[in-house]
Amino acid sequence: DSSYCLQKQQRAKHHHGRVLFRDELYWPYAIQELPPMEDVGQREVRVKYGEVLTLQSGDKFKKLSVAPGGTLRVPMGEFHFGELQMDAGSQIEYMNPGYKSVFHLNGPCIWRAKLKRQNNVKDSTIARGVKLMQHGSETMFIEGEWAGTILAPNADLVLGQSNKIVYG
Image (cartoon, rainbow, N blue to C red; front, side, top):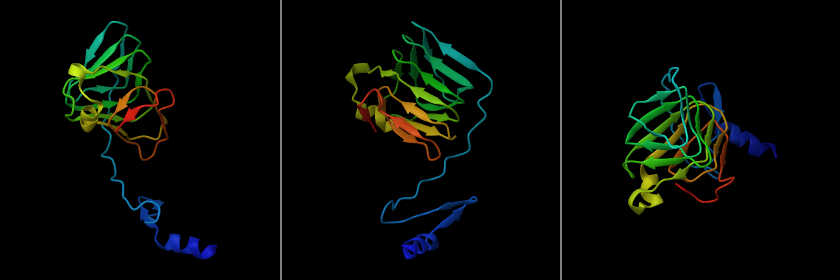
């Protein structure tokens, strides 16, 4: 009925030209805005079969892709990507599981990697430190092993299409 719509409209909040509805009955939480995305530059890197790339905090890539058999080693820190692609058969290893490793993304994401667990570390430990922040509106496909937090307020997220076990 129209009275419900009128009530909802009266509770609406205007924010940066968008109308946000906060209906405590359905979603009582507010989502913080993401910080501005840094310029990622022009560097494009493809990690091939048998290769290992170790990121450094502050790294920026226009595009980073990891082929089957390639490994991405991730230390503590923040990393910026225009596009991120982890192919099926690739691996990701967190060098400091449980500590802050933040992926900032402003473009497409395909994540089909397997977690390379050191010393039988638990997914819950890895998830504590890993964060993927999509600053854009491109669809993200998280189809591999995932442990962490995903913030994608303006993007569609396809989660667990192939791998049904995720942690975060």
